[in-house]
Image (cartoon, rainbow, N blue to C red; front, side, top):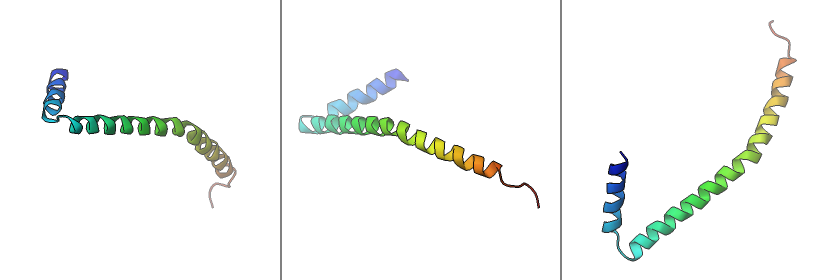
Length: 67
C-alpha cells in the first residue's frame, strides 16, 4: 500500500512542474495550517458544550417521569 502511495506521489510530482508544483505545495501547507487551527479550537468549544450538556442533563433528571 505504501509503495502504491509513493508511486502515486511521484507520478503527480513529475506531472507538475515549476509553478504548478509550488502552488500545490502552498495549498497543502495552507490546508495543514487550517486543520491545525480547527483542531486547536475544538478543545475550548468542546469543554463549553460538555458543561452545557451536564447542566441540561441535570435539569432533565429532575423532571418527573411518567404520567
